[in-house]
Image 1: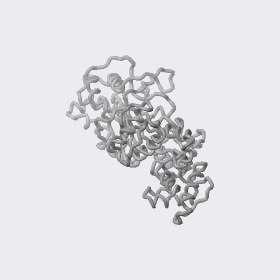
Image 2 (image 1 turned 90 degrees about the vertical axis):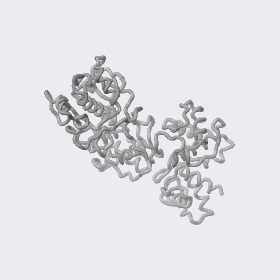
Image 3 (image 1 turned 30 degrees about the vertical axis):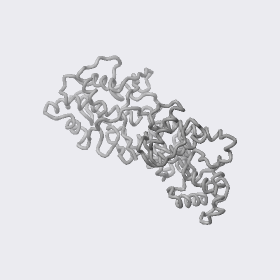
Image 4 (image 1 turned 60 degrees about the vertical axis):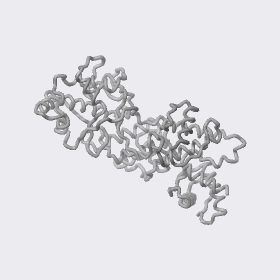
Length: 446
């Protein structure tokens, strides 16, 4: 597993007014935004430790808005407003102070977090003279700095001894919606995030069905939970998570956990543990690498531009050669590393291959994984194909429980799949992914 720590964006979209005001949106660099706000809200003559404490509060507040997608989850197309009534003071084209700019450049990818949690802390603050609040007092921080406190001592004075500073956070793209609809049979971190969020939302909305899956596979119970969520929140009941459903889930999850609140339930490191890596590279091992190998191997059988090389569960020289050829073929950045963008293109290429198998290879069509994970509750032609393969195995292997070819992935079908998974050390899940399908097809051909 890999912990999904917050990412500091390169750019931020600022709405120049209150959320519903008819104002323009502008895109500025993250550092320019923080420098602008700091120059608008604090004074360059303050002690350096007070400036650092205030700038860290500004950074953390901003990242909390972005990480929780506070405005995007409400249907807006910006990250934060310029209104201090809602967020922080931002003045377009204002002059900034050199010493404040220098501090921002030095600490822009540091933020406050609460011990045992992951998300940037909702670091509320006020001036401490005209307005007081439960968070940091800007003028009070000056007095504390003058008394000899450093920036961390100042922050703990206002936010508690259980806060710390995350240093050198990664910088990059922060958008969480994967860019495609997430639905039955899919697997990966987007599915895992949906399941995690719905499990927590269920505590407040008990009508949402239970999700027991821990593998990040969009199965029937996940589909049922999504449908009930869509019904509760007046969305089209499709069982598929499109952009609107994704951000509504995000908004409700943030609300029930109070992630944008001083008294937050927080997001623990366990909850931020994602099953799959965003980038796979030389030396990586495991099921993710095997998935890549399966799809690349299948493509290489029909496409001479992708070399057919011997692979295993290790991302090795053969993997890198095949990935590089694939990236060149599909006009992707040629890095030899495998990203989620590469995965989406590879999955689409595989799906298109299934639709256009050459006539001379049609007899092998059943050997190919249908492109999505099959589990209890799934029905259709692909289940018919699976059951026909299982029936061939049952005819010579009496240890297989049996199968009725009815197109329904029922308990008997699942039992037969589990027996084969157990026999061949495939992980006894009852879920048919590419490796289980390949083994079942291989056994059926005997």
